[in-house]
Image 1 (cartoon, rainbow, N blue to C red):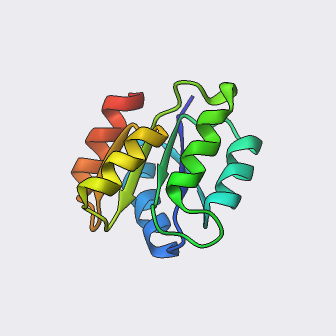
Image 2 (spheres, rainbow, N blue to C red):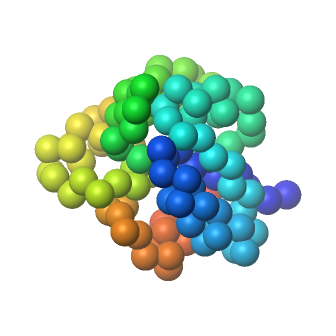
Length: 121
């Protein structure tokens, strides 16, 4: 059974790029365009890993991570921030909220694949 990645990003091209990168490697990729939609998509699907943007409308990535971490049903779910932000303060804030890792955009396909492989196989 293939593992499912939830890609949460307000940019359709980034969501598509994650799909184009991970689908040929055997992963199922589903998308959401902000944290609000991400939470409802997460609740409606069996998800093995979340790749989440930081800056999104309605609910940003850090707020979404906090909401996910409040729910014990998602204990241990890896969440990787994928963002243009490379500031140490933002990285620290995301880590404190419960992010598992951080990848800076534009992302390298091999790096994304490697991180996903390490986290969920």
